[in-house]
Image (tube, rainbow, N blue to C red; front, side):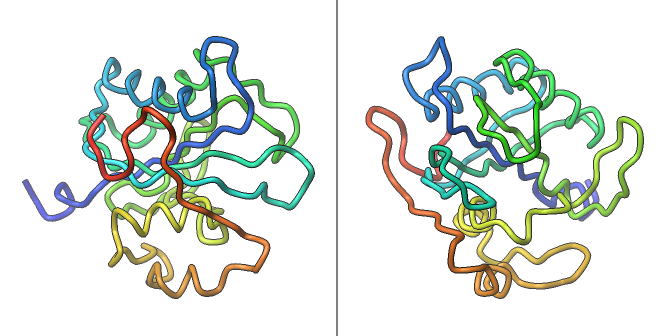
Length: 183
């Protein structure tokens, strides 16, 4: 296994609407993490859970977010397709950008690879992750020494440059594991 194969893969998960089959957004996300295992994706560990303000700021409900480190033999494009399949399974409807949602699964970093978007192609790293507390705060839980594959910026510097309205508060959901746990 070469050094690139040893680098981690990170996905982000978020929701701010209750799902008809689950009592809360965090239970929806927990079920989605379990669904990954049925699709050749193993969750190794995940961050603390976060309550986060909508981006951009709006009157929609706050989100529940986390970042998971995963292991898979799927290439990045197939992994992204798998994440979209799970979103579809859980009833995600893509309407307008930044709309409230039942579930959102994002491929954030795939072993440090850099790739431009194309038809059925993942953009790597995720193009908007650096300006989002709901990604950077949980990612820092798992990878405090992470650096952006393109800019080389540290996660500490990226977090320090976030606007003040980017709020991410860790919390412990009742009955669910608190951070850095295995699913």
